[in-house]
Each structure stands twice: as structure tokens, then as C-alpha cells.
Amino acid sequence: METGILVVEKLRGKSTLTRCFSKYPLKFIVPNKVGSSKTDAAWVYSLTYGGGIVCGDCVSCDVTVGEGCTAVLTTQSSTKVYKSVGLKCSEQCFEARVGKDALLVLIPDPVTCFSTARYLQKQIFRMGLDSTLVIVDWITSGRHESGEKWDFKLYKSTNNIYLEDGQPLFLDSVLLEQGSTTTIVERMQNYQVIAMLILVGPKLKNVQNQLQEELKRIMGEKFYMPSTLGRHSNTKSGPTKPTFVASCSAFGPKGIGLVVRIAATTTESVYKFLQHQLASMEPLLGVSPYC
Image (cartoon, rainbow, N blue to C red; front, top):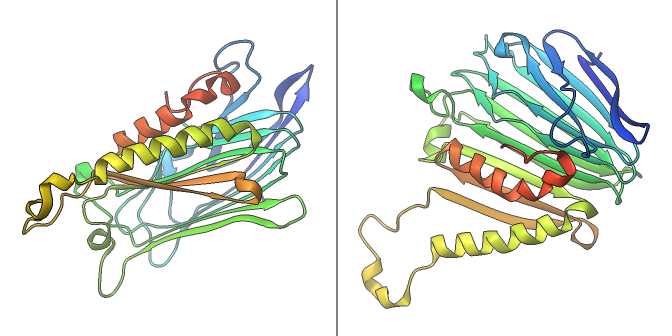
């Protein structure tokens, strides 16, 4: 049985939360209004009792966004995953249906896994070609103040998007697991955050185009080596690794979707990137994401 259920429908011409159910360890906070009174968007903040997900917890959320509605689901802070006991995992499942001409924006803070934690996350989205979807899925290396960097045992996050007829539109899985030959921290080196941003749907075409052009410029500047340096650009230590790396690629019929993948040395740099790239959505949402 789901620990959370959300249904957004049109009432008196406004996107309205018509059903909101949650039980331990999940809780929803629904503000009366976010942003301008002219904005048609229902905002929901999710949190867990105790500030995180305890070993053995299974959080399951079901969301329905009705025709023509706009819904934003976010968090108050990072999702903390506490230490595991034995081989037990903490699990989080999310399933959403996005109706015709509807918009769902899933913009949580990052997941932070404590030392020895084991975490499984699965998110499933069902939508039409005329629906619009924004997904942010990201993880930090852990509690830096405690000296923990990529010290958890297992992290797996799956994001699957299907069209109304059941046809797969986007299937993705990220797995970070401590190995017998190399650890996660050895593989990640100095990068402390990995993130994925997914934009799908007709309402976001301008955002997608702008994002692709800006990424070309940003990454071009970071990796461009002036020809005047010639062979002197090579040093014994090799080229300096950039502190922020991002790439993007289109997917789906006529490139309806765009996925952006990010690796960075600081959480703040990813926050700023997301805030800047999604700022143009403010008229749809009432406020800019990650403001």
C-alpha cells in the first residue's frame, strides 16, 4: 500500500489538490499559495519523519496530474538515507501519471547517503506526447563534515518514462556500489555530486533549446585548449580536471525530450546551474525552481 497519494485536478479553473494522503514515514506540506495569485500551479513539499529514510523503510508515492493541470513536487531539504543494518535497504518508489496538456515538475533536493547506507529508488512516469515533465534526480557524496565521501554501500536510482500506449520513451538506471577491486570514491575521484535533469514535452521546447546552446558554450570554454599553447600545454600531471562537467542529448519522437547529466565538485554549483537553467519556468510555476 502507498505511503502517499496525491491527485491534482481542475476546480473552478485552477489546479487544485483534490486528494492528499500520507502515512508514516512520509508527510506532505501543502502551502496555500506559491508565487503570484495569477499562477496556476499546485505545490507540494514532501518530507519524512526523523529527517530521513531509516534502514528497512519503504516509501511509496502515487501521483496523478489531471488534464491541463500543473503540479510541483519538491522537498524541504536533502533526502538523508541512514546507515544500513546487514543487507537491508532503504527504498523509495514513485509513480506518476501526467494527463493531457498537464505539467509535472519533480525538483527534490539531492539524496545524501550516510556511511554503509543501502538505497534503492524507482520512479515511473506515464504521459502523453502533449504532456510535459521535468525531473531532477541527484546525489551527493555524503556527509562531508563527518569525513564521509562516497562511503555508502549501495545506491541505485531508476527513472522510466512511458507513453500512454505503454511504449517506453526513456529508460535509465544509475548504480553506485562498492566493489571488491575499486571503491566508489576511487571511481568518482574529486567529484562530489552527480545529477540528471530530464525535460520532456512541448511546453519546454524553448528551455531545451536554450539549455543545449548554453551547455555547448560552457563546456566549450572549459575544454578548449588554445592552439598557441602547442605542445607546451601538456604537463606531467596532465590537464586540469574541470570542477563542473555536463552533457546533454535529445531523445524520443522528434527530439521531444532532453536529458542532461552533470558531475561537479560542489553541491552549490549544481544548485546554481539548475536555478539558472529552470528560471524561465517561473511564469508556469509561480516562483523559480531552487530559488
